[in-house]
Length: 111
Image 1 (cartoon, rainbow, N blue to C red):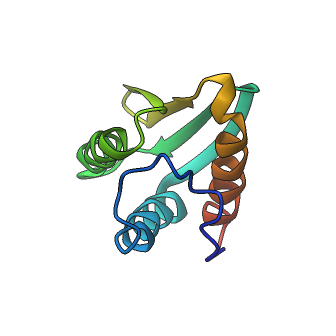
Image 2: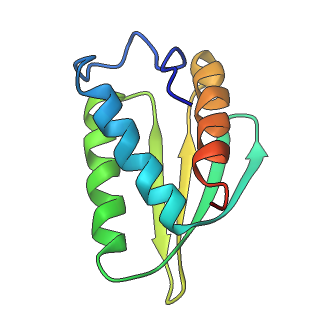
């Protein structure tokens, strides 16, 4: 899914860096995603398998993503087996969350 049309104009990450950031997320998801759900229209929930350095990797990506796309709210919780990552938006950015959820579903498919 190389089309980045779902990335909002309000994202301040330079467009040349966007494919690199998406590739980082895709790699993390393809390696660690165990489940994806959408408990509400404005929120998605990911579960990622814990492993060496994974929590730090998630927190780093979340911090950088928050810096360029302030409309996202990220919440992480960790237990011994999983890192749960919730991503939420306001109603104005629901279509962005739709695109992101579709992207995650593709990136996290078993290879």
